[in-house]
Amino acid sequence: RETYSGVTIKLQCSHHAVVNAFSHIEGDDVLARWSDGLLYLGNVKRVNGVKQCCLVRFEDNSEFWVLRKDIHSFSVGVEEVCCVCDAPPLKEPLINCLKCRHGYHPECHTPSIEPEADSNSWICRQCVFAVATKRGGAIKRGRFARLMQIMKLRLPYQLSSLDWDPQHLTNQQQCYCYCAGPGEWNLKMLQCGSCGQWFHEACTQCLTKVLLSITLYCSFALPLSNHNREVIQLAVLGLMLLVFTANSSAVVILPLWCPM
Image (spheres, rainbow, N blue to C red):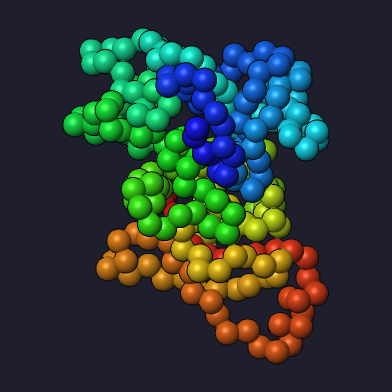
């Protein structure tokens, strides 16, 4: 059994892989990343190749259209092409993830795979986030917590390529956070005080308490001695501001550090 974001799945083969390739057909069981940054088990009911999305029915019988980038399907066997660029090995063999056995060119993975990486121990970004994310904040201790910190040093997309609305609350690509998944700014997300990007509660490791449905304003500082870790420092709110925020919509705006 493997657990992804709290979803336990019984693998039928030791080489079952959670992959990103858009080869889904109706009836496929998939993991879909939701706007909270977590993965949920579902079944593909319809495929729209033009819009690159699938209609997924989840375990509670709800149905939603999910973009290709946010769908992870199951495949048997170690693939012989890179799961990112769909090309075969170049001069060097592909590096396969220890957990999902998915293959990568070293330069196609984010961050790039180190030359000394070994397929018997290396774990890909997708599997790290699948295991480390959880409600209330990502895990803070253990191997996957450390791997997550390393993965966060680079985003898997270009911030400058995102098309934002005038208020910088949503972007057309539906690409947020470290995980590049969908999101809703008013549902337990944190906004970086530097770049303005929004991050899922489930993907952040700096929280000491679960986020509440209340607007909080914070100050942010990143001393060199902090080793590029996420930082949140709550500001002291006045009584009148507390009354106002307690009656506002469910918005959380907390500056934190992100890779730029």
